[in-house]
Image 1: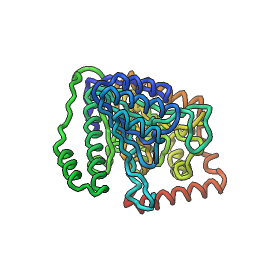
Image 2: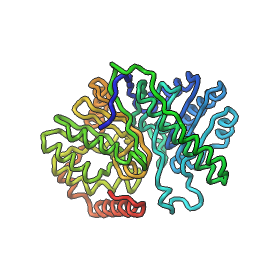
Image 3: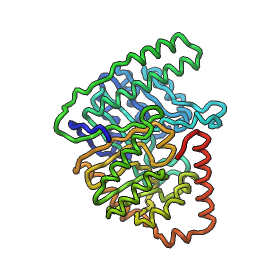
Image 4: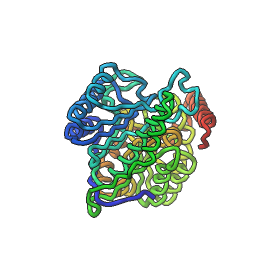
Length: 398
């Protein structure tokens, strides 16, 4: 179970319209240190604003550490590298593809977290990349913002986020030194990594909201996020609401959803309704039939692109984070979710989910789904087969 602790304040941030002003205000108020991790750092209005805030913090003498992913962000503009260097911001790219690209299965592992810790007292976590709400990388600019969420948190879990980000940064430094043949420097970096102190929170430990930080990596936390979902669903008594952009759950999670319906729980899934990526869009469809047969309600979001990775269970348990319920997130990517036990917070998240389902989505009809055109079913099976082949080649079972 998640390591829930009291003493948190948690604020829900919907879309970049709420997230970016809050993040930039925190960066501009930083006095000691900023750590930021993102999958995508895009050259647009939002990216320019965040990079500018990081640079201003660096010029004030704040220690600033930035990490972005090598697939999500293959490169950043030269003007940004110059600005970051001149302002003292340190940055690293996780697993750049190199000349062989994705031909090496080890390169499939990604840094998909969206985390920021400011002065070790305030954290941001969610699904929102440093990317303008209306920019869709695979398509034309959109007229409707992506549907997504993040949280702004103070409390004990901030120290957990800082610890994992500091360790990750130190590992990246060690790896970079080894790749550059700087073996003595790599040894010293490794010694510093082993000797890293563990930060402890100075926030109030009693009262406030109960919350926990769930991390997924390829070492000691391979199943924590999926297991937390399954445990919460297994204890559900009235309602399960899940919004997930790329939904291809494993057998255990599918069984948990079906068993919940059999206990009389209303299970509603808000899933991607617009075509974005071939594999993610089609690979989950072969599982829809069994879920619909069991009584799971599946809503396909139509108003724009769905990017949320959130859930509310029984109006009290809620999670907001970066982890999709598909093999890439659950088996190959570094992820971070905040889990909250609080009725007020859960209500603040469930309201937009219900509205999206009831007003901006298409409820799948079991009969119509079963009789969809043959060419669609063939695409679904092809995508699912490609997904399984990808997992086999990466050495994972799903």
